[in-house]
Amino acid sequence: LELYEGYERSLRAENRFDYEDMVMEVVAALERSRDLLLELEERYLYILADEHQDANLAQEKLLTLLSSFHERPNLFVVGDDKQAIFRFQGASAANFASFAERYPGALEIDLRENYRSRQRILDAAQSLMQHSPESAIRSRKVLRAARSRGEASRGARERREAAALAALITPAHEALFV
Image (cartoon, rainbow, N blue to C red; front, side):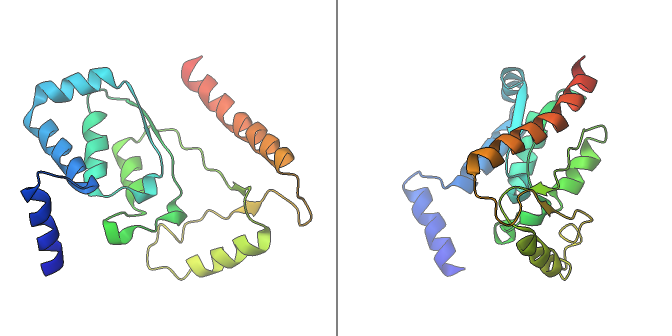
């Protein structure tokens, strides 16, 4: 605690911010100034939050503030509830559950095909996650390997992955915008 307090004093003395300070300062500024919030909401009509499982409370608050103007904001959130590894920084796999509560009509595209690992690795990881105290990590989602044991062609895998994603996204896009 003493080391951290010294770190914070050093930052303030030199009028510097670390990443978390910057996020918290932006959140505070948006909460203080409705005009600033409206200006940013008007400027950023589409918001992408990648690696959402790693977002902490301040980042969640920023996302909520920036997307609060519209009843159905253009908000695209990407992440994997089973990869929430930054809990020590305030991240939580519960981000996905709270997102679903805040935006009950949101379209969820659940990808279950893994293009990086073989089935043996995925099965071992699933077995370990079943012992996690976080229920979100013990989710019902079971991944299956997209590549067979001997497959080596990266280009073929990438084309197949792109085609599979397009097949998932196209009907969802048509349902929303056509």
